[in-house]
Image (cartoon, rainbow over all chains, first blue to last red; front, top):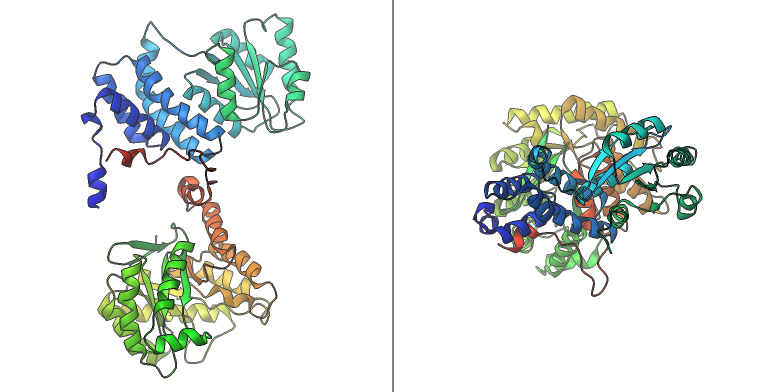
Length: 230
Length: 298
């Protein structure tokens, strides 16, 4: 026990730089109360909510995303890290919503397409996108063109993401893309698709802009789309 | 929820319904091992040390200690190996003997809260073992046979187990400190042996609320490819409510099978135990998991 006490870290005693680094470590380790506490401390110290989000939370999720991509972290750990991020976001969201100078990486409307109820992978993508600083509007499962369209009109996203787990439901992505083409929406909104039965060939065939082979790469692709990745 | 707390001087292990399945390493046991028997008799304990380290490394959470050598001074050997083992590992121990004096000398030498192996429902055995359990405030394995032997009827074995639990409570021993061994018969001889134990486990858990253990390898006695039968049997046991077993943790694939069953039974939160054991090792020169950030700056 004495060892643990020795190692105990009082977040409030850390200077700003050390605290941010510690929060990134805690986020990586999925420690919800600690990340929430750190967020509150930075706010108390007068930090702007956007800066807290980008430096501490998004910065930490970057390591999570990289290690997930590299096979070092696994799904339960990513979910736990995402939950820790949510802890901090709970404090930041109301402030960000009320603030004038909202800085977000970009907006994404995402959903599992009509006829398909599988959403674990899609939710993981949504979390990774949030972790990368995107505002994500998650439409859930069984999403029709009308629902996608309504959300795009309302939120004016940079990206629409579609997911399917079944070979029988993935053709619906082409339906959505066709409707977007008809309405000349493609010049403003990039289309990302993903899901277990998909591959690059299918994505090309339905003329999607990007195919995300897994959740980690999807966040990277999305950043490339909005022009903040090399 | 029933929890049986075992401990050494510095570490606690809980056997329980919502806990990971506890693997009790069986290899500190000279039965059928000529050299090991001879060495124990001569007070040469190097093999004991080796078995301690190998089993803990392989994943045993508790170690069974049996030094039963015919015509040797078993109480003396027990009193010597217990401190030796406790100096090598913080895993709690299961003191295993059919000789009461050896059980008592083991208890006297032990630091912490061991599992005593065992009592049956035989009157004479209960009268001698249960007072020891009460005196040393430890837990005890209760084997569900009595003076009439081992019944093939699982419902009779249930009644026998219940009798031990009741008798134990007369001595002030709580039901959670009685770990019932429902007795696994060889499935090659009694074809319903597996099925009988699964049903019995449900009853022991739901009606009697006790933790359970067994010598699992017995089930495949006389069959080819025994390991595979065992490795399938253990997850089935844990799914039926068994909470520990005395096993050979060095058997190929056994420990992963038990840990996988923990994941599937929902007693490995966040699958973290599974992931920590089976996360691919980083290649030479490559960085592994960053983790441990909490401790880095201590």
